[in-house]
Image 1 (tube, one colour):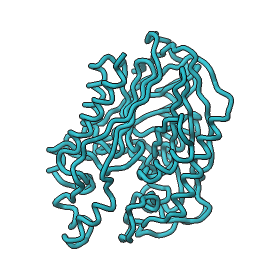
Image 2: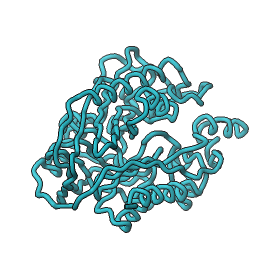
Image 3: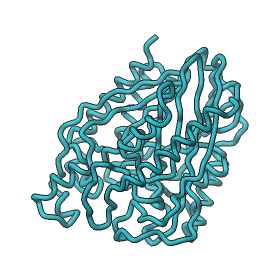
Length: 394
């Protein structure tokens, strides 16, 4: 099923840029503690940061897709410093598990844990400089002016990995003059397993390269990729081909009326970080150390970042919400009058996995990395709905 949609907005433009984001040294890869903190091996695929600055009636929003594991809050702050005021930042990690461990950029992670990198100021500065450079470069590029629109298609490229998971199978692509700007889909970038010791963008990298588009992960907290093939390379190729087939660049237009570009931030009312009852055992540490470790991982504050383009709303969550929570936010936005709502993960921060209360008490891997207690999912949904209400106001 393909449901192409288009919005006709006045004087809408996009400025783009892309830079390589592969560090100049071999670093430990993040995402799989089974690698034991070993350095990456040489010969991997280049990593990239891609930028699209949306411009409409004085509002400028920098959409940034970085081939990284997560976005620590310290990185978001440092990038914002470099680009200065006047451009709102929507900084997204594609969540590839074949990029350097982002905990090196987390200024709270000040001691070593087996399999997890500790903070290195040098690499925070390097990544912030590089991403900031990409945004500034985009801001100086010639603007592409035209009609924005988007297309929606269903694709069987994901599967639930927790009890009662119902993955969101909608591919959503925002376009200008029929050409992709960003593509969103809910699937972990984990087609490559822990035995891969070289860098790769995984499936988001291939989709971004082929479609010349930014890629945003959807609500992936309980969702893995599902693509056919005998090898990881074949599965990634099949994934990309399915995206191309389900989202052709030809689409019938549907008028969404006159709209606007808006950007909002909404704080999440988080409780103090605390370890899940299974956390200490799952990480092989003594109970007294569990709270100290969670304090290093978990941010004390977090916020929803969201924007709208006409009747399309995009809600960015600073962590990994489950499909159920993503669906709650999406449905609330449609009830507020938006034609479509895209929920993105790994935006402007990382507060861990985000589960609803029942799912939290089921335990398991994701629950042990739900770092703000049983009600965090409720608080994230509440903040997401407040952000949508703010975007919906006239």
